[in-house]
Amino acid sequence: MFSNKLFKKYCSAEWLPIFDMNKSTIHVKAKQRIFNEGDPVKGVYFIEKGKVKVLSKFNGKGEKIIRIAGNDMILGHRGINYKHYHISSEALTDTTLTFLPINIFLKIIKGNPNMAIYLLNFFYRGIA
Image 1 (spheres, rainbow, N blue to C red):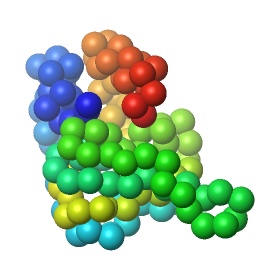
Image 2 (image 1 turned 180 degrees about the horizontal axis):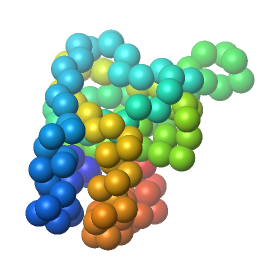
Image 3 (image 1 turned 90 degrees about the vertical axis):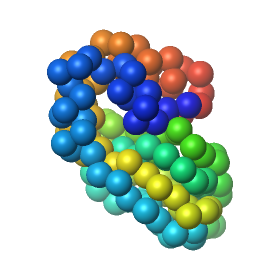
Image 4 (image 1 turned 90 degrees about the horizontal axis):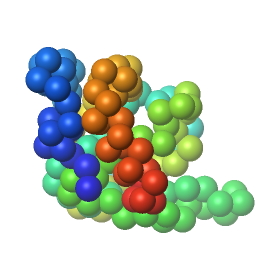
């Protein structure tokens, strides 16, 4: 589970204005792509409301669903160390997302040890 509510929980007070100034809300319709495999990594997305399928190309034979993400989950986080997304995401329902640019996301993680520890646990549990 991960959303901007949890982001606020794990960030110190001085970082919250930076989060608030840099986030944006995105509304996508069902069947609309959020990002495609190969797109440049621009940031991470927090699902505030809705359902999203995460897709990956397999052997050049189309895409396969590798995960379904819903309320309070994160998308695009595996692109942290890459220049391009290695998966795609598509809304299954009308979805509301909070977007945070990758450079801001990384600065906030570096400045907030509690956030870094939460993310490590998040990745370790295999929810990522």
